[in-house]
Amino acid sequence: MDKKEFQKEMLEKSDKIGIVLNEKQLNQFYEYMNLLLDWNEKINLTAITEPEEIILKHFIDSLTIAKYIKKGESLVDVGTGAGFPGIPLKIYREDISIMLLDSLNKRINFLNDVIERLDLKDITTIHSRVEEFGKNKKYREKFDIATSRAVANLATLSEYMLPLIKIGGKSICMKGPEISKEIENSKRAIKILGGRVEKIDEFELASTNNKRNIITILKIEKTPEKYPRKPGMPAKEPIK
Image 1 (cartoon, rainbow, N blue to C red):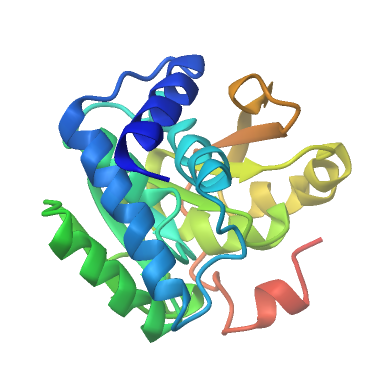
Image 2: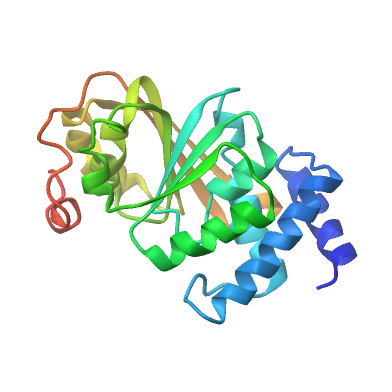
């Protein structure tokens, strides 16, 4: 896909979610896509390789949570993978500070290359297991927002994310369709970890039939020191 086609597609899709992109941002997204495809030939970053699908399912999908983030807030992107939603958010929102967290160093190398090539500011990468990151006093309960896309079930995800958020901060969980049972099964875990489900927004992604849910969890109390448990435990034995 050439740059003109790409820009046309990005503008059409972003308009459908109420986002206006300038030329600099469009150029950054185009370069990001090309870096993603180049690196994907060396390391496994994404199964989505068609430009139209990258635009919709990676870039536009990531930007759907921009409206939940206030000016100047700090955000940690848990299990960011190839940088979603963190890097699209940073391209669009220069006012927020972002930390990209991932457990695989190869992905961190890719993310650092993207940050450098796109000349992004106030965005950093951390190579760590989230369970260990959440125990680190330097980062524990220090962020306004934690977010994650397609990383784990909601109970497990809450154990990853809620320990990272300040009281009054939020966990923004990006999910697909059919989440009612998952929410029901996570209620006790969310309460134990100091959170409360604030709202659930269901929508179709940019006027397609790709159904999405965004679950916002408000941090109302400190997370008990025992959480997160040691690496592997939140996924193996979610709080019930």
